[in-house]
Amino acid sequence: MHSSLKKIGNSAGVVIPKPMLAEIGAKAGDSIDLTVENGRIVIQPLAKPVRAGWAEDSKRLAAEGDDGLVWPEFANDDDDQLVW
Image 1 (tube, one colour):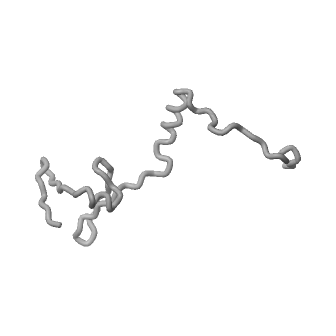
Image 2 (cartoon, one colour):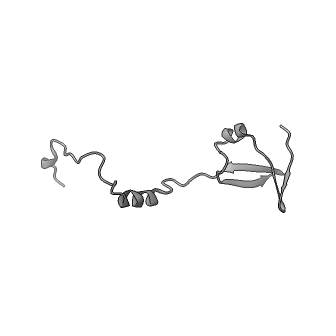
Image 3 (cartoon, rainbow, N blue to C red):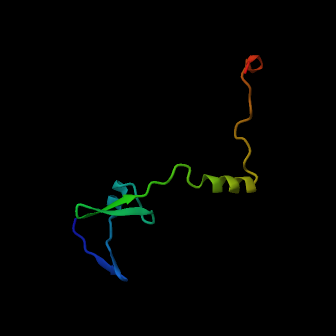
């Protein structure tokens, strides 16, 4: 596929078709990593850290009073016989 570079201020940009972005698991607005390898520009989506945003979400849930247990606590039949 041929394209052209567009002037954007002091930089340049290129339009990447949606199917090509989907092929690398990215979409418009995502953060990406740009590198140059062997004279080629490589675009990769940034992997989100595991559990990114969980702390903020748990604080929001607690503030909304929606942080209760989803399942009730329950015991196993032989729990009273366990020796630690």
